[in-house]
Image (tube, rainbow over all chains, first blue to last red; front, side, top):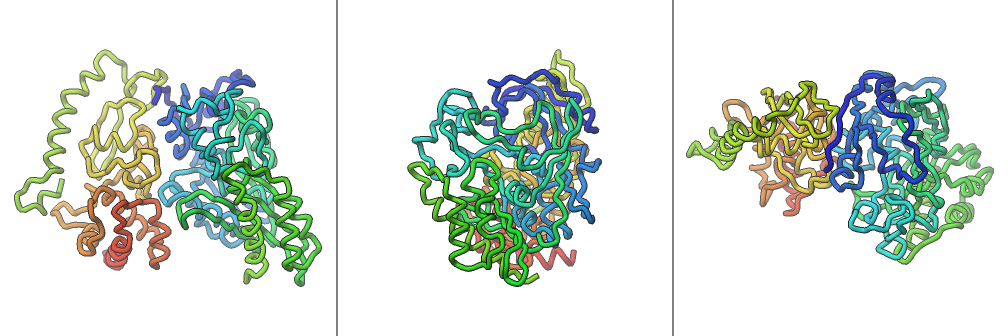
Length: 342
Length: 206
């Protein structure tokens, strides 16, 4: 690991103030940004040991737990999830479990108990792909690490890689589960940065891979996630996260579905669907949602929705199985949500 | 150290290592820090400068001068002489390095030592009573033959103690799920579940 300067910030202002504003360069990979915040450290320290990340400055923001960024509040307008809240705390929170089961399940099915005690919600959504070529610097070809260097995964061992939202430059899978639940529920993100505060839809936080997969998010240099806001949605009680993987626990998804259903007398008024394990970013399946709206759930309708969700899938040599697995995962999740006893 | 109370000879590999490492530290640390300015806050604007840290481990304060890159795991093993905590993968995948920080189980390999100043760190060495009586979970691992090679055991036991305290040890299935972050290459899993079930009521009584 390379040496770095270490500082602590106990206010949002001191955190964002510590970052020089003029670091933007279109050729600089997000992962190589010289200034990094650390909360749980579960992604950052791992990737620093691998020399994938080599920050010159690390700012510890854990003291922000004492601000609203460390709190969970549930009210008539919805749910506020502070970015410094740990995964385990959010997963165990009674309001989250009761009103947004998909959020709680996406968190408790992720990682291990130890990692959930460490990892913050803000860091969780920004976690980096587990593409083994990205994580291993002995492979020189990785457009996400080094723009223009190529992609070793494209014709490599790509069983775990994405089939939705991929580009000719990168097929890395987005590894997170919580992000899928947030995008399904139309969450928003509260940000603070050297140039002030703003609020954006969670769906706009991650950039599509396109021809610049090295720029992972729409965050500006020094910008920090303060909180997530999930709108009030009484019918989100009928929601769940289904995760299919190689082993039953402590494993990334091969395919997952975050679903929420508003059903009236057997007919679907609203459906929210996000798909993980198969996608390059948090992935909302709006085409599938449209196939369900106004319909009664049945085998044909479910099959239509699943086909629509994967109509644009682009598999590579080892991951074509994810199309069928993803469809079956979605159908099972929808069936389970529809029959939930509330 | 309390392990000697359980050892008929009053001498164990662990005590031997502790003594050796501690004496090594006293020689090397002043050398390492010589001629450098060391801020007392655990922060440094100079990437190469060592940090002066105060870590509270098992109720005892340790003053250590460490490279800023030192993980809590390496601080425990290489600098505080507490080698009970094990290094498995060093990447947060195996759970062998599990310790408690403010009573929550975390991975010491993915924690910089400087991030846990002012926190209460508990390692496997801090579980037994001062008179040497083992923690119910330690005794349960022995009673249930819950290990073979023993390398993952300190992490398993720290994780198991937290698992019970969290209330996540109410059924076999729940124990397996909430202990999944601790891998055992000897596959002692069924006996680990049995050990946790034995210790659970004893911990609640205590």
